Length: 273
Figure 1 (spheres, rainbow, N blue to C red):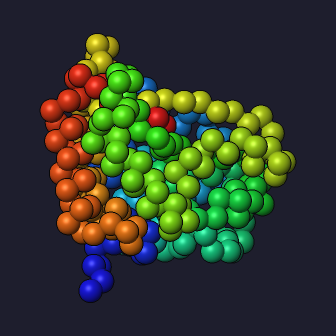
Figure 2: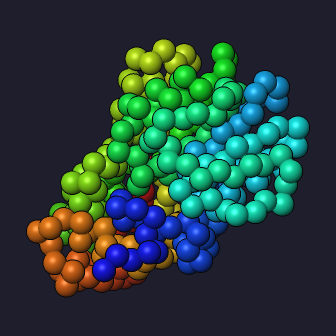
Figure 3: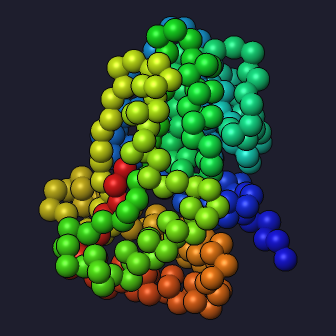
Protein backbone atom coordinates (compact mmCIF):
# COMPACT_ATOMS: atom_id res chain seq x y z
CA UNK A 1 0.00 0.00 0.00
CA UNK A 2 1.35 3.42 -0.91
CA UNK A 3 2.14 5.78 1.95
CA UNK A 4 0.98 9.29 1.06
CA UNK A 5 3.39 10.97 3.47
CA UNK A 6 6.12 10.50 0.85
CA UNK A 7 6.47 13.01 -1.98
CA UNK A 8 7.21 10.47 -4.73
CA UNK A 9 9.18 7.31 -5.40
CA UNK A 10 12.42 8.89 -4.10
CA UNK A 11 10.99 8.01 -0.66
CA UNK A 12 11.45 11.38 0.95
CA UNK A 13 8.88 12.80 3.34
CA UNK A 14 6.48 15.33 1.80
CA UNK A 15 7.30 18.89 2.80
CA UNK A 16 3.65 19.51 3.64
CA UNK A 17 3.73 16.74 6.27
CA UNK A 18 3.65 18.45 9.70
CA UNK A 19 6.58 16.55 11.22
CA UNK A 20 8.68 17.17 8.12
CA UNK A 21 7.78 20.86 8.15
CA UNK A 22 9.13 21.11 11.69
CA UNK A 23 12.32 19.28 10.68
CA UNK A 24 12.84 21.46 7.59
CA UNK A 25 12.38 24.64 9.62
CA UNK A 26 14.96 23.29 12.08
CA UNK A 27 17.26 22.56 9.14
CA UNK A 28 16.85 26.18 8.03
CA UNK A 29 18.14 27.29 11.44
CA UNK A 30 21.12 24.94 11.05
CA UNK A 31 21.99 26.53 7.72
CA UNK A 32 21.80 29.98 9.30
CA UNK A 33 24.31 28.84 11.93
CA UNK A 34 26.50 27.34 9.21
CA UNK A 35 26.51 30.61 7.27
CA UNK A 36 26.99 32.71 10.43
CA UNK A 37 23.55 34.26 10.26
CA UNK A 38 23.52 34.88 6.51
CA UNK A 39 20.97 33.47 4.07
CA UNK A 40 23.57 32.87 1.36
CA UNK A 41 27.32 32.42 1.13
CA UNK A 42 27.59 35.05 -1.62
CA UNK A 43 25.96 38.47 -2.06
CA UNK A 44 22.54 38.41 -3.71
CA UNK A 45 22.18 40.94 -6.58
CA UNK A 46 19.89 43.80 -5.54
CA UNK A 47 19.09 44.70 -9.14
CA UNK A 48 18.23 42.59 -12.16
CA UNK A 49 15.62 39.87 -12.43
CA UNK A 50 13.83 37.88 -9.74
CA UNK A 51 15.21 35.12 -7.51
CA UNK A 52 14.37 31.44 -8.05
CA UNK A 53 14.36 29.03 -5.10
CA UNK A 54 14.38 25.38 -6.22
CA UNK A 55 12.89 22.79 -3.86
CA UNK A 56 11.73 25.43 -1.39
CA UNK A 57 10.21 23.00 1.13
CA UNK A 58 8.36 24.99 3.79
CA UNK A 59 9.40 28.23 2.11
CA UNK A 60 11.50 29.37 5.08
CA UNK A 61 14.43 30.52 2.94
CA UNK A 62 12.23 32.13 0.27
CA UNK A 63 10.28 34.10 2.86
CA UNK A 64 13.45 35.15 4.67
CA UNK A 65 15.18 36.42 1.50
CA UNK A 66 11.96 38.16 0.42
CA UNK A 67 11.82 39.99 3.73
CA UNK A 68 15.52 40.85 3.54
CA UNK A 69 15.19 42.24 -0.01
CA UNK A 70 11.60 43.50 -0.32
CA UNK A 71 12.27 45.01 -3.76
CA UNK A 72 12.98 41.55 -5.21
CA UNK A 73 10.40 39.10 -6.52
CA UNK A 74 10.92 35.53 -5.32
CA UNK A 75 9.61 32.49 -7.19
CA UNK A 76 9.81 29.36 -5.04
CA UNK A 77 9.07 25.91 -6.46
CA UNK A 78 8.45 22.56 -4.81
CA UNK A 79 6.50 19.35 -5.37
CA UNK A 80 4.37 20.28 -2.34
CA UNK A 81 4.72 24.06 -1.93
CA UNK A 82 3.06 26.14 0.80
CA UNK A 83 -0.47 27.12 -0.15
CA UNK A 84 -0.28 30.70 1.11
CA UNK A 85 2.34 33.38 1.61
CA UNK A 86 2.41 36.34 3.97
CA UNK A 87 4.60 38.44 1.64
CA UNK A 88 3.47 40.02 -1.61
CA UNK A 89 6.85 39.57 -3.32
CA UNK A 90 6.86 35.75 -2.94
CA UNK A 91 5.13 33.33 -5.31
CA UNK A 92 5.02 29.62 -4.48
CA UNK A 93 4.60 27.25 -7.44
CA UNK A 94 4.08 23.51 -7.67
CA UNK A 95 6.80 22.24 -10.00
CA UNK A 96 9.20 19.36 -10.51
CA UNK A 97 12.67 20.83 -11.01
CA UNK A 98 13.65 17.87 -13.20
CA UNK A 99 11.00 18.67 -15.79
CA UNK A 100 11.49 21.35 -18.46
CA UNK A 101 11.31 24.90 -17.10
CA UNK A 102 8.91 27.42 -18.65
CA UNK A 103 9.16 30.52 -16.48
CA UNK A 104 9.15 32.99 -19.35
CA UNK A 105 11.86 35.10 -17.68
CA UNK A 106 15.43 34.82 -16.44
CA UNK A 107 16.74 35.15 -12.90
CA UNK A 108 19.50 37.13 -11.24
CA UNK A 109 19.98 34.47 -8.56
CA UNK A 110 19.03 30.78 -8.38
CA UNK A 111 19.15 29.02 -5.02
CA UNK A 112 18.98 25.29 -4.34
CA UNK A 113 19.43 23.69 -0.94
CA UNK A 114 19.46 20.00 0.02
CA UNK A 115 18.37 18.80 -3.42
CA UNK A 116 20.30 15.52 -3.51
CA UNK A 117 17.29 13.55 -2.27
CA UNK A 118 15.23 14.51 -5.30
CA UNK A 119 17.49 15.03 -8.32
CA UNK A 120 18.23 12.12 -10.62
CA UNK A 121 19.48 14.12 -13.60
CA UNK A 122 22.01 16.68 -12.35
CA UNK A 123 23.39 17.56 -15.81
CA UNK A 124 19.90 18.58 -16.96
CA UNK A 125 19.19 20.57 -13.80
CA UNK A 126 22.48 22.47 -14.00
CA UNK A 127 21.92 23.15 -17.70
CA UNK A 128 18.48 24.57 -16.97
CA UNK A 129 19.99 26.77 -14.26
CA UNK A 130 22.54 28.07 -16.76
CA UNK A 131 19.94 28.80 -19.44
CA UNK A 132 17.56 30.50 -16.97
CA UNK A 133 20.12 32.84 -15.42
CA UNK A 134 20.45 36.34 -16.81
CA UNK A 135 23.98 37.48 -17.84
CA UNK A 136 25.98 38.02 -14.66
CA UNK A 137 23.51 35.99 -12.58
CA UNK A 138 24.52 33.69 -9.75
CA UNK A 139 23.73 30.08 -8.82
CA UNK A 140 24.16 28.76 -5.27
CA UNK A 141 23.81 25.06 -4.39
CA UNK A 142 24.08 23.87 -0.79
CA UNK A 143 23.90 20.17 -0.08
CA UNK A 144 25.02 17.08 1.79
CA UNK A 145 27.86 14.94 0.47
CA UNK A 146 28.46 11.31 1.43
CA UNK A 147 30.06 9.43 3.05
CA UNK A 148 29.17 10.18 6.65
CA UNK A 149 32.27 10.84 8.72
CA UNK A 150 33.77 10.38 12.18
CA UNK A 151 36.82 12.15 13.61
CA UNK A 152 37.67 8.93 15.40
CA UNK A 153 38.81 7.02 12.33
CA UNK A 154 38.80 3.72 14.22
CA UNK A 155 35.01 4.04 14.14
CA UNK A 156 34.69 3.83 10.38
CA UNK A 157 34.74 0.02 10.24
CA UNK A 158 32.56 -0.67 13.28
CA UNK A 159 30.01 2.14 13.54
CA UNK A 160 26.33 1.25 13.04
CA UNK A 161 25.64 4.87 12.08
CA UNK A 162 28.29 4.87 9.35
CA UNK A 163 27.03 1.46 8.21
CA UNK A 164 23.51 2.88 7.84
CA UNK A 165 24.96 5.72 5.76
CA UNK A 166 26.72 3.32 3.39
CA UNK A 167 23.59 1.19 3.07
CA UNK A 168 21.39 4.24 2.43
CA UNK A 169 23.77 5.53 -0.24
CA UNK A 170 23.56 2.19 -2.04
CA UNK A 171 19.76 2.26 -1.82
CA UNK A 172 19.62 5.83 -3.14
CA UNK A 173 21.95 4.90 -6.01
CA UNK A 174 19.58 2.08 -7.01
CA UNK A 175 16.96 4.79 -7.45
CA UNK A 176 19.20 7.07 -9.49
CA UNK A 177 20.18 9.43 -6.68
CA UNK A 178 23.83 10.46 -6.38
CA UNK A 179 24.74 11.65 -2.89
CA UNK A 180 28.24 12.53 -4.07
CA UNK A 181 26.98 14.80 -6.85
CA UNK A 182 28.48 17.86 -5.13
CA UNK A 183 31.96 16.51 -5.90
CA UNK A 184 31.09 16.77 -9.62
CA UNK A 185 29.44 20.21 -9.59
CA UNK A 186 32.56 22.26 -10.31
CA UNK A 187 33.49 20.33 -13.45
CA UNK A 188 29.91 20.22 -14.71
CA UNK A 189 29.35 23.94 -14.11
CA UNK A 190 32.59 24.92 -15.82
CA UNK A 191 31.75 22.71 -18.79
CA UNK A 192 28.42 24.50 -19.16
CA UNK A 193 30.18 27.86 -19.26
CA UNK A 194 29.72 29.11 -15.69
CA UNK A 195 32.45 31.52 -14.62
CA UNK A 196 33.96 32.22 -11.20
CA UNK A 197 32.88 28.80 -9.91
CA UNK A 198 33.61 28.55 -6.18
CA UNK A 199 33.47 25.56 -3.86
CA UNK A 200 33.46 25.56 -0.05
CA UNK A 201 33.09 22.77 2.48
CA UNK A 202 31.43 22.91 5.88
CA UNK A 203 30.62 20.23 8.37
CA UNK A 204 27.70 19.58 10.67
CA UNK A 205 28.80 17.88 13.89
CA UNK A 206 26.32 15.35 15.21
CA UNK A 207 26.23 16.01 18.94
CA UNK A 208 27.68 18.53 21.37
CA UNK A 209 31.24 17.20 21.25
CA UNK A 210 32.84 20.30 19.56
CA UNK A 211 34.50 22.75 21.94
CA UNK A 212 33.63 25.99 20.12
CA UNK A 213 30.20 27.30 21.19
CA UNK A 214 28.77 27.89 17.70
CA UNK A 215 29.93 24.42 16.63
CA UNK A 216 28.45 22.92 19.78
CA UNK A 217 25.07 24.54 19.07
CA UNK A 218 25.33 23.45 15.45
CA UNK A 219 26.00 19.90 16.60
CA UNK A 220 23.07 19.93 19.01
CA UNK A 221 20.61 20.98 16.30
CA UNK A 222 22.16 18.73 13.65
CA UNK A 223 21.81 15.69 15.89
CA UNK A 224 18.17 16.53 16.56
CA UNK A 225 17.57 17.04 12.84
CA UNK A 226 19.22 13.81 11.77
CA UNK A 227 17.71 11.56 14.44
CA UNK A 228 14.29 12.94 13.49
CA UNK A 229 15.06 12.17 9.85
CA UNK A 230 16.15 8.62 10.70
CA UNK A 231 12.99 7.93 12.69
CA UNK A 232 10.73 9.31 9.94
CA UNK A 233 12.38 7.97 6.80
CA UNK A 234 15.35 5.74 7.67
CA UNK A 235 13.56 2.41 7.26
CA UNK A 236 11.75 3.36 4.04
CA UNK A 237 14.98 4.56 2.43
CA UNK A 238 16.79 1.29 3.16
CA UNK A 239 13.82 -0.77 1.97
CA UNK A 240 14.27 0.66 -1.53
CA UNK A 241 16.97 -1.99 -1.85
CA UNK A 242 15.00 -5.17 -2.70
CA UNK A 243 17.68 -7.27 -1.01
CA UNK A 244 16.81 -5.78 2.42
CA UNK A 245 13.64 -6.69 4.30
CA UNK A 246 11.66 -4.19 6.36
CA UNK A 247 12.68 -6.03 9.53
CA UNK A 248 16.36 -5.80 8.58
CA UNK A 249 15.99 -2.13 7.67
CA UNK A 250 14.36 -1.31 11.00
CA UNK A 251 17.17 -3.11 12.83
CA UNK A 252 19.73 -1.01 10.92
CA UNK A 253 17.91 2.20 11.83
CA UNK A 254 17.60 1.21 15.51
CA UNK A 255 21.31 0.38 15.64
CA UNK A 256 22.24 3.68 13.94
CA UNK A 257 20.10 5.66 16.39
CA UNK A 258 21.70 3.84 19.30
CA UNK A 259 25.16 4.52 17.94
CA UNK A 260 24.40 8.23 17.54
CA UNK A 261 22.94 8.45 21.03
CA UNK A 262 25.55 6.43 22.90
CA UNK A 263 28.76 7.13 21.00
CA UNK A 264 28.51 10.69 19.64
CA UNK A 265 31.17 12.06 21.98
CA UNK A 266 33.52 9.12 21.49
CA UNK A 267 33.21 8.77 17.72
CA UNK A 268 32.64 12.49 16.92
CA UNK A 269 30.36 11.93 13.96
CA UNK A 270 29.74 14.69 11.42
CA UNK A 271 28.17 15.34 8.01
CA UNK A 272 30.04 17.03 5.16
CA UNK A 273 28.17 19.91 3.48
